[in-house]
Length: 436
Image (tube, helix red, strand yellow):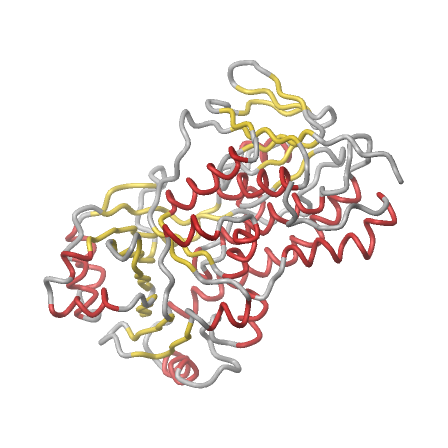
C-alpha cells in the first residue's frame, strides 16, 4: 500500500461564491485551506440569484440541501412574455421536471443567504478565512501572496477567485486589465409581496412562483419570488446610461417609468411599488489564453477568468462548478506532487464550457432585446413552438441538457481514470464529492 500523502495548503483569494465553493471542495478533498478576503466583514450585496440544477447538484452533495431549501424558493416554471401585454410566448416547467431529469432542483435565493450558507459550511469544515486581506503582490514561483499590511502567506497552490475586478488577474498578466463595458446595465429592485397582494392586477404574480421574463426592444425584465415568497425580485436589463466613471448609482422611479411606460400594465404597475432601486453597469472581461501560471502553482477561477452577462443565469453556477472541479481534482494529490498536470486538466475541463456560456449569454441578449419587426415575429413563432430549435435556452432540449445535465463529480472521476491516475497513482475511492 503506498504511503499516505501529505495534504496541500491551498490559498484562495476571494471569499465570494466561487472562492468559498473551491474552499469547501478542496477541504472535502483533505487539504488545508486558507481564504483571503479584502473586505472587513463577510457578506454579499445584491438581491436574488438563481441556482440551476448543475449547481444545486454540487451543493446538495456537500450536504447543503436543507440549508439552501429552507432559504430558497423552488420556481414552478419559466415563462417568457411579450413586453406589450404580457401574453405568454413560451413556458418551461421547472419544479418536479428538473429533479426527475437532472437529479437536483432549480432554486431562487437571496444572494446574501446563499453566501451565508457557504460561509457556515466552510467554517464547519475548518477553512480559515482572513479578513482585511487586500492583495498587493504575488510571488508565483513560491507561491506566496502579500497583503496590504505587509504580511505574506505561503502555500502550495494559490487560487485567484477575486471576481470581475481581480487584482490577481492583473498581477498574473503583468498589466492593467480593467473590466470591459458591455453596453447594458441592470436595475435591481426588491418589492414586498404584501404590497403586491393589495393590487388585483399584481396579486396573481405572488400566487405561483413563476420566473417571469418580459422581453422587448433593447431591454427585458426578469422577476421572481424570494425569501418564503415575501419578496419579489425585479431585474431590469437596459442600455447603459451611466457616466463612464460611475459603475453603480441609485435609480429614480421616474427613470424606471420612462423606460417601461409602454410595457405590460402589470410590469409598469409593479415598478410603482419600488421604494429603492440601484443600477449596475454590466461588465465582462477579455478571454485569456490560459488560466494557469507557468509555475503550475497559481490559477484563476470564476469571474476572475470568465465573467459573463447574466442572461443565461449561469454566472455563479460556473464559479461553483469551477470550485467543485478544481477541489475535486486535488483529491489524491499530495505535497511534493507536481501540480502541472492537474491544473492543465482543470483548465481543459472548465475553459471550453465557461467560454460557451459567456458567448451564449451574449447571444441571448440579442434574442431577448430584438426590436419589433419580421425577425421578432419569427422569434415569437419559434418561442411558441416545440423544444427543438427553440430560442428559449431552458426549453431547447440540447441546450438544456448541456447546461443542466453537467455533473462535476463525474467529470472529475473520468479525468482521474482517463489520465491523472497514470501521473499521480490511484487515489482512494469516493471521488471529488466524498466527505472528509
